Each structure stands twice: as structure tokens, then as C-alpha cells.
Length: 439
Image (cartoon, rainbow, N blue to C red; front, side, top):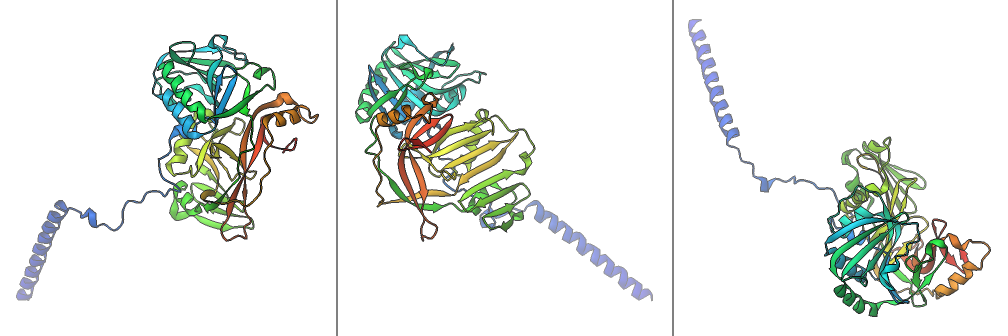
């Protein structure tokens, strides 16, 4: 029995020694462990994008829809993006010498400027401070919330260029160090590629030459276009927008598909409209749209959401919606179902709603559809002014845009047809003009 007891003690001692040695070896290996990161199979996964990430220039997204050169009654204008960007970049390279606000009653006169000036026209009121700092890259600090819809460049009254951001109640005047001679030389060259424009007075606010509506005089050379449509992957947008990728529930309904996750809800309808709602922002107070313009730009750009040429086009203060609209050849694209729009509503800390079309333009194809030539600006003015159905003083803008139509779903490859039309901003709504009627 004593012999057996001795063996047991010996075995226990050996086991204890082995365990101590193993522990020492494991501790040494852990302390000196260097992972072979290059051989790791599972890499860090980034959220997908539906277009190139972070290549958007904020100047393009907040670009005016037209530039107008007024030269002693000889009016030229353009919607060409390259030219407008060149003028914007010229201003961006200057510095502010002084800046101050001027009271405005909505009928900005500026008689001291003279009969030569350049205009940038926008379709929506933009915060002055945001535009000066983020688009013109100027060092300007102000806590005011004044907006503007027209920017006027005075390169005649003094040696240096003056900029006027014209709002309904206030005008921000900026004296820059940009040389008027250099700007005039640039404009003299660029005017050669501009087309004839005409002016339009619709009410008391458009009575002065600084505030009149300026529109292309003729429109008979505007063509229709057809593009093969690319459909954006819903999964790619979900991967870019929804946070919990592993917990998405998909439910198909008769006219739509809904995706549920712990952080949001996505619906996609038969008209190829995608809408995302962020559940964490559902009960928060929605942010004032003009205060988060840059945030909305960064959100869309972060996942390559500007899949075509998009620009800020409208802001709905009541619904707190920021609306970016597709442009084609420098002209806005309209679609009744919202296929040509990207809209964002911001909550307290993050986006609350994101709505967009799922189609983008791909390869241009010849358009076989005959398009009726558009009437002149004067013809449109005459028909609307003489109509008993409309009040001419409620017209606040007029431009040439495209109506985007999608081909029948029965086609193997969907096409997008872009037909030119006159569009009128009437009583704060953009309506298509057809044969004397607004639709």
C-alpha cells in the first residue's frame, strides 16, 4: 500500500510540473505573439457606395443654373457648367477687403453700379454665409441667417470687383481684391460662346434691370436626348445607409418592397423610388434645412449618391426638405414621380429621411422621337400675359428644362427620354408650359 501511495504522489508531482511548464510556455508565446496581418482572410469591411466616394465638388452641387452678362442692354447668358464654374473659381481666388449688409425692399436698384454687370441666378434662397465660406472659399464670419437668390458681380464701378448677394430683405456687399480688368477680360472672351438673352418684368419686384428675369431669347435649337438607364442596386444603398446589415428583414408587397432593420426602414416602390427613414430620428425635431446644407451634401456624397449632375434646386421650409435635382447639359430635369430628385430631411443629430430615384443615365443613344420646337420667350410671355387663367405677377422664374420619361418596363433595357420644355415658376410651384397652359 505504501508503494502505491508513493507512485500516486510521484504522478501528481509530474503532472504539476508539466502544467507549470506549459503555463510558462503559453505565457511566453502570448507575450511574444505577432499576428501576420497580411495573411488575415477577413479584412476590414467598408460600407458600399452606389457611385464614386467623395469625388463631388461642393461648388458643382451649389452651382447657379445660369450666368448672365448685361452689357448696356446687350444681354448674353449661358447654362454651360464649365463657363459658370470658371467664373466661380475666379471669385474663389480672391479675398474679402470689406463686407457689410445693405437694407433691401425687394427692388434692388444699385444705381451707382452702371449698365454693365454679371449675374448668377439660383432657383432657391441660399444662406449668404454658407455660400461665401463654402463655395467662394472666403474667410467670412457672420451669425446672420440672411439668404440670397441672385448674385451680382460689379466689375465696372471700381478697380476691384464687388459682389452683391441679393436677398429679399438684405443685400450682402463684398468688396474683394480681385481685379476688375482681369474679370472683364475673362468675360469678354466667354461672352463669345454665350447666347442671346432677353429680360422679363412680371411684377414690382422685377421692375429694375438688376432684378428682372433673364431668359434665353430663342429655344428652337434645344434637342431631345435618350440614354440607356442604369438601375442602382437597392442592396448597395442599403449597405451604405443601414447600420445593422445582418438583421435586415425583406417583405414584398403588391406595389413595393420594404426592408426592416433595427435602425431604419426602407421602402422601394414600382416607380423606382427609394425611401429610407432613420428610426432613431423619428421623434426628434427636424432641423431647419438651410442650417444643415453642408451636412446633407456630405451625407449624400459619402456614399456616392450624386450619381448624375445634381444641384440644389428647392427647399421646403414647412416639410424641412432639401431637394437636389438632376441636370442634363446644364438644364434642370423634371419628373412627376421624383425619379430626377434626391431629397433629405435632417433630424436632431442625423438624417431622418432620404428619398431618391433609382435610375441614372448610362450610354447616350440616338433619339428617334420627333420633338416639337419650343416657342420663343416672347411667345411664351405673350400667351401667359394675355391668359385670363393666370396672374402674370405670380410668375417668379422661367427657364428651359427637360422632362424625363422612362420607357415601358416591358423593354429589355430601360431607356430615359429627355424632352425639352419651358418651365415656369408660378405661385412658388414649377410647372411645365404647353401651348399657353401650365401643367
